[in-house]
Length: 123
Image (cartoon, rainbow, N blue to C red):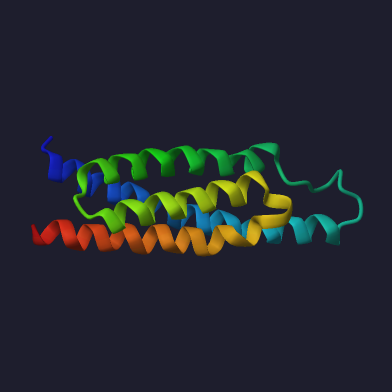
C-alpha cells in the first residue's frame, strides 16, 4: 500500500472511530438515567465492558492519529490531531469531571481528519 493510500485509510479510520465514540458518549447518559430510574439496580446496570469501551476508542484514535500525522505534510493538521486526541484522552481518563470535553474533542478529530483527507486528495 502506498503512503497516500495509507494516510487516507488512517483518516477514514479516525473519522469512523470518533463518530462511534461520540455515539457511545451520547448513549452512556441514557444508560445512567435508566439505572437511576429503576431504583432496584439488580434489574439494570451499565455493563463493565461498556465503560471500558472508552479506552478502546483512545487506542484506535491514537493509531489513526499517529498514522495520519506520519503521512501528512501539513503541520497544523499534525498539531490539531494530537491536540484533539490529547483532550479526548484527558476527558476519558478524568471522566468524572471532564466527560463533557469528549464531545468537542471528538468533533475536532472528525473535522481535522476530514480536512486532512481533502488536503491529501489535492496532492
